Structures are given as C-alpha cells and as structure tokens.
View 1 (spheres, rainbow, N blue to C red):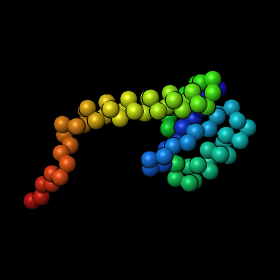
View 2 (cartoon, rainbow, N blue to C red; view 1 turned 120 degrees about the horizontal axis):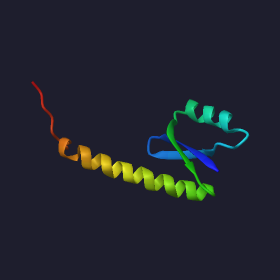
View 3 (cartoon, helix red, strand yellow; view 1 turned 180 degrees about the vertical axis):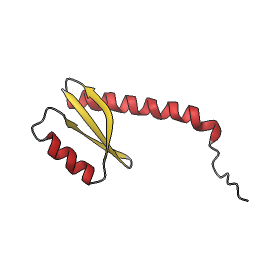
View 4 (cartoon, helix red, strand yellow; view 1 turned 135 degrees about the vertical axis):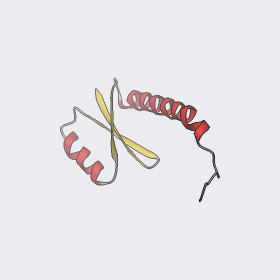
Length: 80
C-alpha cells in the first residue's frame, strides 16, 4: 500500500493513496491547513508507514540541524 503524509504545525496525518476517497480526503486536509508532503511511503500496513515516516522525518531534522546549527544562534539580534 502507498501512503501520503500531511503536516500541520507539530502534527501529521496520512492517507492510503489506493483509498476510494483519497482525493476528497486530501482536499479536505489541505483546506484545513495541512501541507501535503512529497514523500510517498510504500508499506504493508499503516503502522509500518508511520514508523518509516517518523524515522525519515527525524533523520531529516537532525541533518538540517547539523547544517544550520552553526549559523543559528539563539538570542542573537543585530540591528543598525
């Protein structure tokens, strides 16, 4: 099964692409402010897809933090 994920703030949800109501549900989520993710996960079950998504998402955030970390200093503000 293929799953599409959607993010909003600190939450996420997903839909099975093969579902008969996928397009309608996807439209509803987007109207509710969810952002469609480009990643499509193929898995045997929704639980497996969610575990893969969490792993990929956490790995991405760690890489982003490693890349941007040296350039981001909390509390630093420069004004003229």
